Image (cartoon, rainbow, N blue to C red; front, side, top):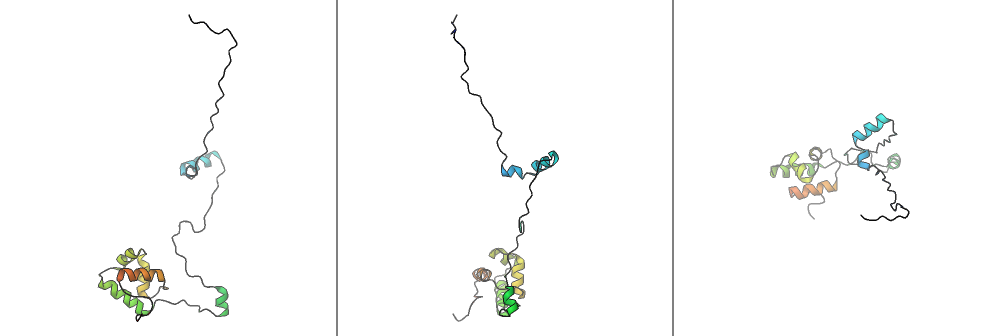
Length: 144
């Protein structure tokens, strides 16, 4: 039989403390976790972000001071009839619908419709995309 050490027996093990991991941000937004917190009476923080979920593009800003002084016209310039007709003729020559053109320039079909109806305020970026797809000059002087 093996002999035992008759000395004092000591434990050389350190106590192990297990900490619960903190919940991640994604887990806190989970609807199940929110409902569980509501049921248990835990505090819940809700934040409404400005323009959250809207996919609207910023409209041109007209300075109120300039409008009051009369240095800036109240009405914004619209697409000219020459540009409207050029867009429409080039689109029809390429046999594209307004929706197809909008898809190719990565804009909404409503944007193309507004340009062809003359209701849109000219945006150089959109006109540039249309020029590239339709292969027609829409901006600047034709003689350049």
